[in-house]
Image (cartoon, rainbow, N blue to C red; front, side):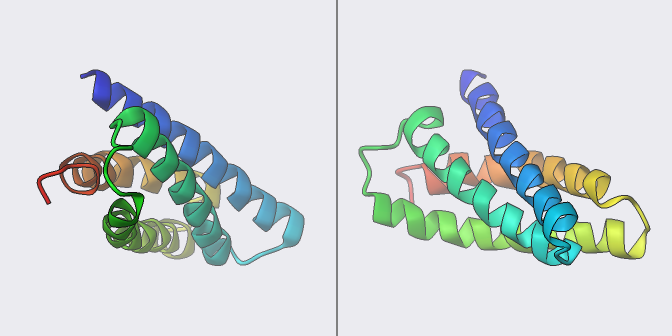
Length: 126
């Protein structure tokens, strides 16, 4: 249970940085929403990997390169799910992009990221 709570705190930190960058790019730089969402996802992914490796799963003993390859594979799916979710919810369904980003991020975090990080990326079983 502690690992799950720590993973969600790491996810929250990553999601906040993701959302902040997305809003900054859209509002401040007039970047396309989907491109801004992708850039936010990249930033959040880097933050989430570092926190997950060192604090959540305490997997610093395993080689970082191996974890990075596994994380990159999972993160690629994360990028597609987050960007696709924002595209569908904001671009097609007409939700405000921040609401679309938050909804998508939460769904992807609970249903995709946590299980794969716990059981694949930071697990010695693979």
